[in-house]
Length: 154
Image (cartoon, rainbow, N blue to C red; front, side, top):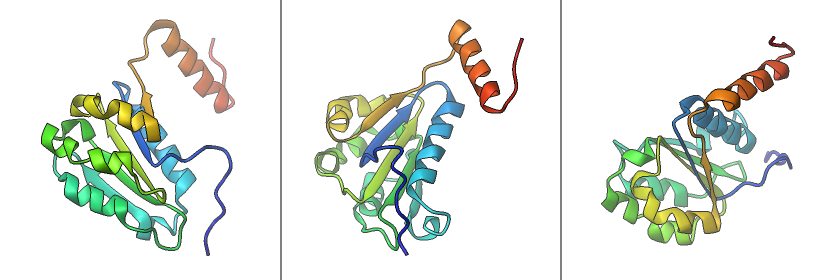
């Protein structure tokens, strides 16, 4: 049975989540995964890759595969910023015509070699930057998190 998607967020075919705040990058990625896949769907439709270890062909092949028993396939590439420039360039055709039933999520500390693909990704997907939190922004974030948990800070 296919689960009805929650109407809370729009699902893009490509996301690039990056920044110095690893915790926030990871949290955003998990939020997307939980929104897109049921616990049962993860067995068939979750593909995990590491940009430093896997090639573009393998990742693109997974992204082009039709999902099983779910409306979406979730392809996660951690350390996407560690991919060689020639590997990133191989994604150009996929980015211009992504599989609408796949959510390809690229994560890293920076855009790296993906900087040249940024405009193409923005046309079909979403880039999310989590720069280092400092000063008032950090205090505000901590207070908000504590409030979400029903706690207060002085």
